[in-house]
Image 1: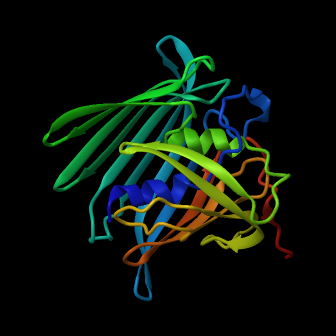
Image 2: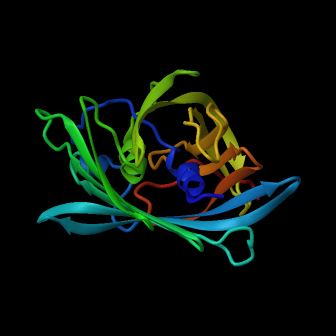
Amino acid sequence: MKTKAIFLIIILSHFSKTIRAEETPQNNLSFRIGEKCEYSLFYNWGFIWINAAKVVFTVTDATYHKTSVYKLKMTSETVKSFSVINLKDTATTYIDKKTLLPYFTRQASFEPDYYSIDKFTFFNQNDDEPWKVIIEKERKKGISKDTIISDKVYYDLLSTLYRLRNMDIGTLAVNQKIPMLMVFNDGTYDLYLRYVGKDQIKLKNGKIYNCLKMKPLLAEGKMFEKGEGMTIWISDDKNHIPMMVESKLKIGSVKAMLNGIENNMHPMVSEVKLKK
């Protein structure tokens, strides 16, 4: 299983309604400094679900080129009991506190016989200029650089997650498709997310949550078939936290479930209180 599987299972759980950036009032954000979300990722082989990896997302305060920014970080690592693979991923993104646009992203993946480091430098803070990103890719064979320029604004993995958690989804209609504009190390992708409706899910800890159910269009890769083979449940409250994700793979399937959240911005009113 390549590292992109772990990235995509969590990150593609959010969506975009607009292309250009807008300033977001800080008290209306769905997250805040100090928020921490932890997930377990399970891999299905036949009829058995195996605990495969731990994924953690954090938000901290930072400075990027003398500008106060949010530092978003994701770490994922396979658990010792999962002997099929051994990998460790990290992704760090610095985003503007007002527009939530990315300034810089570093994504690193390490496996026993392979590693990759991708750096994205964004030039899209001025609406009068075209969106541009410089991508630096480091592999065992060396370093290469690419530049992409577009009249659309594309987001990296982490800035997609945190900025687009703030979308107003109250007006969505069932089966409505929302554009997802994303940039990866091999180029840009115009994807979409389809709103399926409301649902309830039960997590491993026994808690039940009211959720919004989504199905994204995935680009074909080494692990994923092209199509809507992924289903995502996000909390039906102001936090819009990914609670559970299920996805088919070319071989087997995966499931990510929220273990816990710390310092969330809003009360988790999506939790269904069970009668004693």
